[in-house]
Image (cartoon, rainbow, N blue to C red; front, side, top):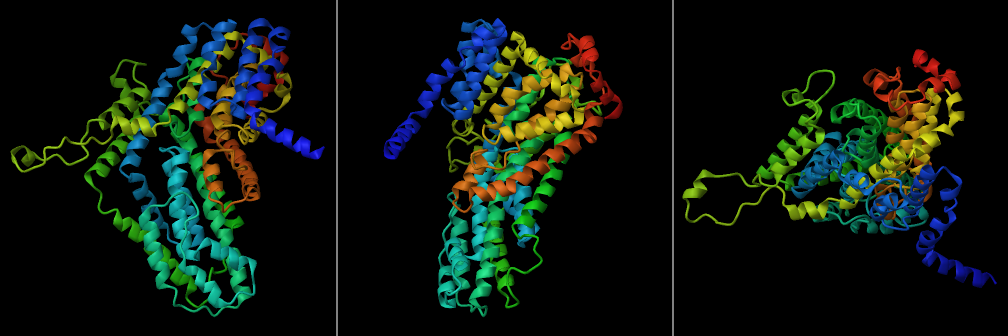
Length: 608
C-alpha cells in the first residue's frame, strides 16, 4: 500500500504544475458569484496570478501577460487601458539601467572594481567579508543581484582556497582527528573551485601559489588541526553567504537596483498622480543610508556568527597565518595586475556610468532646483535621462579615435566597434522582467479601477486600531516573510495596492506603509529558493539550508528594525510623513467617514 502511495505521489509531482493550472481556476470560481461583480472578477484574476506566480505553474512572464486576456474578457478593464501599462516610462528607466549594466559587464569594469576593493580592505577574514559585502552591494546597485552574485562567488572561492586550501581536504580535516600530517598536507596541492566557473587566471595563479607552499611543515597536533579546520569551514561559509545577502541589500539603494522599487514608482503614479516626492535622487538619499546601516549590522552578525570577528588567530605562531594571507594578497593583486591599465573602453564606460548617476541624482533633487528646470515642467523624467545616456553607448567608439588613421594607408580598415552592440543588449537584458513589471502595473490598474483595492481596504478595519508605527513594522515583517516563498516582484505586485488602500482608509501618509513594504520584500534571506542569489550560493554545494535559515532569520529581524528606524527618522523629514498629504486627498473619497470611524489614527500626526 505504501509503495502504491509513493508511486502515485511521484506521478502527481511530475504533473503538479499542470494540475495547478487546471484546478486553480475551478477552485476559485465562486469568487465570481459571491462578491460584488467587478471586484469579484478582478480578485479572481489577482488570485489566479498570485497562485501561478508563487507556484511557477506558468513562466513568470507568461503569468504577467494574463491581464491582457482576462481583464477585457471578464469586463474589468478594456484592452486599450490594459496594454499601455506594459511599457510605462518606469519600464524605460529600468531598461536603461539594464543596458548600462550590460555595457559594464561587456568591458569587465565590474571585475576591476571588485578586485580593487579587495586590495584595499586586506585579507583578514572579518575585513575580507566586509570587502565582499561592500563590493557586492555596490555592484548590485547597478547590476542585477543575480549577475553580481555570479561574478563575486568565483572570486571568493579562489581567495578562500589560497587562505585555507582545498575545500574537500578541509572537510576531511574536520571529520578525522587521526590523520597524519602527511595526509593533511597532501590535500593542499589540489585546487578545485566548487562554485560557478571561475576566471582562469584565478585558478592558475592559485595553483602556483599553493604549489609553492607544499614543502612547508606543520608542527600542530591533529586535534589542533581539526579544531582550526572547523573554524576555517565556518569562515568559508560566512564568505559564501555574505555575497547573496549583500547583493539583495544593495539592490534596494537605487530605483533601478531591483524591480520592486520600480513597481512602487509605477503604482504611485497610478494611484497618486500628483505625488512627485520619489524619484531617483530622493530615493537614493533615503535608501542609501538605510543600505549602509543594514549592511554594517549584517556584517557584524555574519562575521560574529562565522568566526570572522574571533580574536583567535586562524593559524598558530608558526607563520601559517602570515603565509596564507600573503598567498591570498598575491592572488588578488596578481589578478588586478592582469587586468592591465584602464583602457579607453573602460574609461569611457566609467565616464558614462558616472554621468548616468549624476544626471539622475540632479534632475530634481527636491532640496535644490535640478537641471530639469531648463525644460518645460513635467516633460523630462528619469526615463528620458536614462535613454539619452544609454543611446550614446550604441555609437560611441570603444577604441580611441585617431586622426592619423585617416592618412595611414597601412592602417586597418575594419569598422569601429561601439561600446555596446544591440546583440549584446538583447542577450544580456532579461526581457521577461520587463513583462513582469508590466503585468504588475496592469494588475494594479485593474485593482484600482474595479474598486477591488478599496473593497479589501474596507475589510482591514482591525488594523486601524494598531499604532501606525507598529502597523508599518507588521506590514514589513509580513511582506518579508511572504517573499521567502515567492519572488519579490510578484510579492510587491500583489500587496502594494492593498497597502495603499489601507493607508488611505486610516488617513496615514501612504508612503509610510508603501516604502517599508517595498524595501522589505527584498529582504529574503532564509531559504535557497527565496532569491536567485540565494540559489546560486546554495548551488555551490558548501552551504546547507540550516545555515541560511539560522543566518537569515536574524538578518530579517535586523532588516525590519533598520527600515523602521529609517522611516521614523530621516524618512519623516524627507517625505513629510507626519501629515496626510494633499496629493492623497482625491483618492480618499470617504475621508470624513474614516476620521469618524477610526479616530485613534489621528493621534499619529501629533506623535510620529
